[in-house]
Length: 239
Image (cartoon, rainbow, N blue to C red):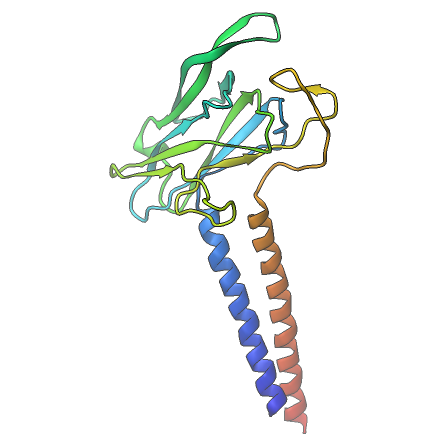
């Protein structure tokens, strides 16, 4: 009897651990996020913004992306998206840059505004959509943050632009942060310096990976515990 109670308690703990992990992970999935499989420092590539509609009654009709001025992107191309328009806004650079073809670049991309052309093309409640951009050059930094203003069909807005105060705790409305891989040794950085190669990987933050790992471990523990309970029940029934 004591063993059965112990097994049941362990099972409850295991299931509770799974619930806790999922409770921590699900809100992170619901945020506006950015990723890029070829996001390398000083390089260029395609970035994808994942936009969920968190409202229970309204659809997402607009996404206004703000690009950093401290590490300016001078090249941004939008991918055509059925049912949506994309408007690119630019601002003057504090210091003009020289392009690969020798031309002088005087402006950087400050914002990209995606708008649904009709209610049918908006993102319904409980669904998500993705927006792709070809951008460059990426800054010579471990990561780059964007601003994202999400507008719903009922007029409400959510501004995803908050930064973590301690680098660990996630704010309520975190800004989309893109992780950048280090450039290969000898690759010129935007300011002309050579970047030192080091291992790295773009994509989701370590917190998302850790939450997923903990969830898998908790599920395995719960499965083992339930198997023990069933085995004890069978043994008791036979005796």
